[in-house]
Length: 241
Picture 1 (tube, rainbow, N blue to C red):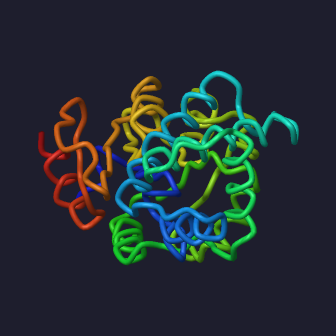
Picture 2 (picture 1 turned 180 degrees about the vertical axis):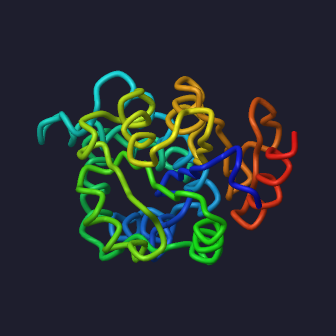
């Protein structure tokens, strides 16, 4: 790949480069059983899609990093209620909050997907700057170390680092500063249409939707891939267009 057109490749973190280990539907099923309910795994995944859209909408209006403990508890009670509804159970907000607390007590972490490290390394070998843009509330350097990405990216900037959440412009603009490029020299890959794709597009960055769970098969607004293994061929095509 020639780096002439796109000098920087930016990525969302969760759902794009890394996922929960164990998978979050498994975490939900375990938590549900501890509260006497059996959840449908496919329904839980569908629920997470809607719940994550709810989270993106919340961050667009009032960033969660600014919420106090009570506000976060109320938000995640609704978030969990959405997941449970798709999993086959309508519960009161109080019960949903209790199940979310059980979810949070389980041991899990973020781990890179199988296609992540090889693609990141090849992109850097091609001469491109590789960065990560995340709405997580810890520092980028700390998260990069925890997830095992430090040796495979040039930087990771979070909403805490930037003082702003996706889809708002400041976090994208600070990422461009770190990458030392202009918006039209960057491309961003993310799994959220609102936070990642539309947020990047609004500041002039070329967006690509990654749809690992095949939830957006009819999406045509911007390029769509289902695996990072498809990215390099798409970049070549975009470079030549």
